[in-house]
Image 1 (tube, helix red, strand yellow):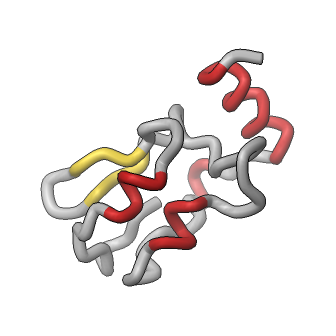
Image 2 (cartoon, helix red, strand yellow):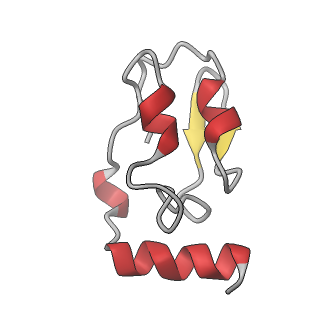
Length: 79
């Protein structure tokens, strides 16, 4: 999830492979149905890596195992 410290710089949008980050009313938001946390591509989510405000945190309402994230990744991108 993206927290209030977001400066709306947009760097995370460019890094998101699954287009899960969208412009919200005040700050960017992450669509949890599209976010794979970069599983299958990178060791860590790239949006977190590039965020200069450290505004992207794990969402306790959407905790997913690596297996679940990889299933979602395959669903979005195919085999």
